[in-house]
Length: 488
Image 1 (cartoon, rainbow, N blue to C red):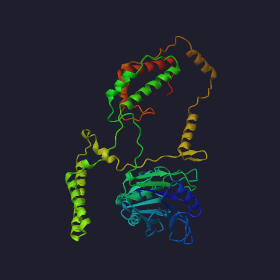
Image 2 (tube, rainbow, N blue to C red):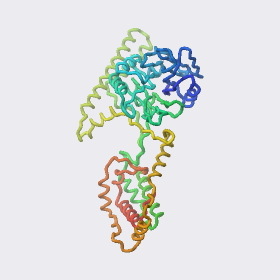
Image 3 (tube, helix red, strand yellow):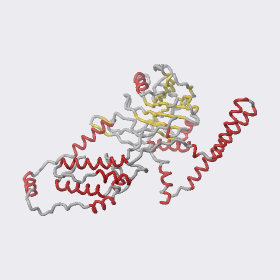
Image 4 (cartoon, rainbow, N blue to C red):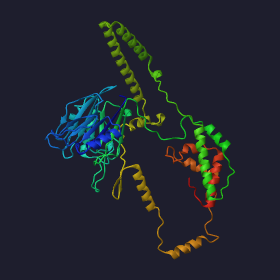
C-alpha cells in the first residue's frame, strides 16, 4: 500500500446516515473513515457495502456519543481494545503498511466534560508508537487552526507537547452551527505520532448533511509535494541575458495618443519582461542521488553488512546469522552517531547575526508556527463555504462599496464641473516623469513583496536596462497626458 486515504467525520448518527457515508467513501476513494458521534447501542447493526464496521458505544449504553471505524474489507487489519470513558470514546484498529504497523483511532470528546492533559495522555498511551487519531475533539486552539483557544484546547496542546505529537488539520472550519449567532470553527482534526508531516496532507470536504464537514488525510510513502507559488526567476536566472533580450526586442517607437494605445503599450512591456525572464531562467532539475552525502565509513559498513547477509543466505548457519545481526546493529549505531554529529554541527553554527543570514531565527521559526485560521464569510441565508461562494460575496460587497455617492447639491456640482472645464486653470499640468525619478522610486521599493498577477517583482524591475526604463517613462507621461489609467 503506497498511499492511505483516511477520513474523519462527525456524522451525528451512523444508522440514519449510512447511505450518505457509503457515497462519501466511494466518491472520494477513502480507505478508512473515523466516525464521531455514531449514536449506536448494543442492538445496532451497521452494514456498509464492501466495508467492515467497528463501533465503540458510550459507557452508559444509550444511543449518544460513541465512535466507529469503517474500513474496506480488502485492507488487512485487526481490531485493538476500545477506549471507553465518559469523557473520551475511541475505536482503534491496526493496519499493515510498508513501514510497519499503523494504528488508526476514531475519537470523540463530548463537550460537557472537563478533560485534563492527563486524560488525553492516558488515551494516547494506548495507541502505540505510530498512530493517527482523528475525530471531533471539541477543543479549540490557534495552534491547529481554530479561531480562538479554549481551556480544553490548552490542555490538549499541553498533552501534545509532553508526548511529542503533531496536530494535522485543514485550517478551515469544520463545525458549521445552525444558529446564525454562532461562528464556525475548527473542531475536527488529526493527531499523529511517528509520521513526518512531509508524508501527510489534510483537506476539507463539503459533502454531508451534518453540521460537521468531513476532513480527509492522505498518508503516503511517497512525499506529497505542495504546490509552490510561481516565479519568473530563480537563483540561476541569467540577468545579463535578460537585459540583452530586452535591449534587442524592445521598440521605443510607440504611439500613446488614445486609451486603446496605452492599454496595448502596457500589455506589450509586461509581456516583454515576462518573456525575457522565462527565456533566461532555466528550469531546475531535481536530483535525488544522495549517495555522495553518505560518509565513507557508513558506505564500508553497508558493504560489510551486505557481504555477511549473502554468506548467511548461502549457509543458514547460526554463527553467520549472529555476525550478520551484529553488523546490522553496528550500522544502526553508526548511522545514528553520524546523524547526531551532523545535527549537532548544524545547531552549533546557528546564529542570530547577519553573517549567517539570521539562521537561528529561520530554523526555529517553523517549529512552533500555528495553523492560520481561514475565516468563513456570512451570507444572508447562512455561510459561504466554497471558493466560488466566497468570491461572489466579495464581488457583491465591493460592488456595493465602490459606487458613486448620490449628489445632494446638483447646482454646486454643475458649477464645479463647469469651472474645471474652463481654460487657464490655476493649477499647472503635472510635470513629466524623468528616468532619474523612476530609478529613485525603484530603489525605494522593498524586497520580497508579493507581486501582482503579472509576477513582476522589485528584483526584476531593478534589472531592467535603460531602454526599458525609457519606455516606462514614456508610458507614464502618456498616461498623464491622455488622463487614462491602463486596464491590464
